[in-house]
Image 1 (tube, each protein chain N blue to C red):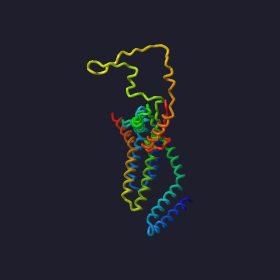
Image 2: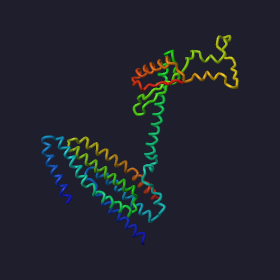
Image 3: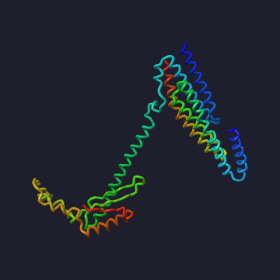
Image 4: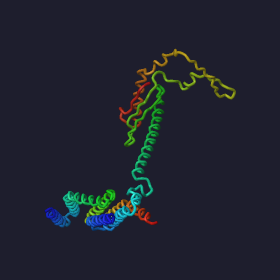
Length: 218
Length: 128
């Protein structure tokens, strides 16, 4: 009997709530739509109240009101995944753009035979994809000849005219020619001057301010 | 005596709007928007009391706050859409008003989708 009384009380409260909410509705064309939703909510509330009396298990089985109950993943998850994917694609595009620019800069700089550029680091503004800064890394000291790779290797012509690489002997022991590495970071004044001129050319080429293109020696 | 204040503002606005509509219709539209916003701000503080009562009743009836939140959102959407559509109609822009109402209807139905699904599932579970 107490259960029945409680059920009736709950239904009375739901009805009062529905009347109150209906009083709040606007008069326009939207009224019908909002009334439909209110009707559904009342059905839901009455069902829940009735289920609480008949079978408590039923109430647990009534799904919560979330978008995920439609079988699809929640909207927040979809949006988050989309944003993540967008960020990954943007990063990839930015990386490709930087690599492309770096290659262009290196090709332009290495047209000058006085100095050798080994790297060009390009910083791109994430907001509008503008170039923020370009740093060109020049090789200090004498520029390697075009066939520089051959220096440490022995090549012989074979019968077909192609080059064969002779076996390379690796000797372990104390390094004797330390002076070879001591010349690192030592650029001649001429090289610095040429590097400065080249950075100016690059800045002009890409329509950048002179202080946006820097150089360093290694 | 807030109702006197609100009525005074509305009446003054109406008279001014009628006068302005002859001379400068755009200013009349702006005036109607301003009067609407002022009246809304005046009653905004009292809406809180109604929401409190609704919350108490929903707790008493064991209705989840998610349901009530959805309901209040839908009512808010309906009022805003109605308000803006009226302003658009006053400015002789019936097409805009129709579009706003369409957008509001779609948003209401989107908010109602989870409730519809919940009711449907509950009803289907009742079937043996």
